[in-house]
Amino acid sequence: AQRVTQPEKLLSVFKGAPVELKCNYSYSGSPELFWYVQYSRQRLQLLLRHISRESIKGFTADLNKGETSFHLKKPFAQEEDSAMYYCALASYNTDKLIFGTGTRLQVFP
Amino acid sequence: EAGVTQFPSHSVIEKGQTVTLRCDPISGHDNLYWYRRVMGKEIKFLLHFVKESKQDESGMPNNRFLAERTGGTYSTLKVQPAELEDSGVYFCASSPPYGTPDENEQFFGPGTRLTVL
Image 1 (spheres, rainbow over the protein chains, first blue to last red):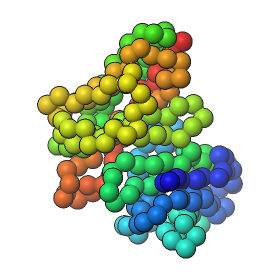
Image 2 (tube, each protein chain N blue to C red):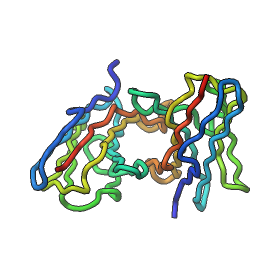
Image 3 (cartoon, rainbow over the protein chains, first blue to last red):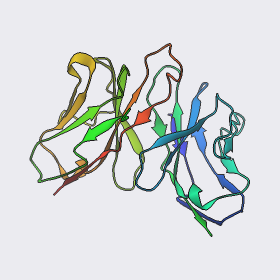
């Protein structure tokens, strides 16, 4: 079965500290992985996707097929990074997104 | 461009009543999706329209839920009769037609918070 697991409900760090939000997936095949972010009082928006291999707002994520992981990383957290982060998976034969339960990132000054 | 819009933003109804949620996708987006997040759970897929056709409705929980997209523009999601477990946030998303750049990026609306008492 297709599944996305985000083991941490809450991650709290201080400004300037490194951040890693974990995401593991279960899928037999080649999935497309995404990170979505929801800032306070804003709508869900795409942060990055694995096929684009780009860094957005200092965040990067590498697809590790051996470990079936797609962890989100940032070397130096900023207060404005505080938000809810969702890892999501889409298979090539369907467009629906399968979401993890989300991780709330709190960055303290 | 206003992005994906949803109406209403909040709805409070009693068990057994009917509620209709509306979604207006981004102009030109053929693909329209409905998702919902029940309290404490993950965001779950409900269904996917391509223009006016239902491409995938595998996530619809039961026959109390009816989604339509007449004319391939806006979509409605009707819950009739509503039950307590239907409470949650209902999200709509849209994406560009296949074969266009960013065809796989889904743009989300702000959601409709439904409370069934």
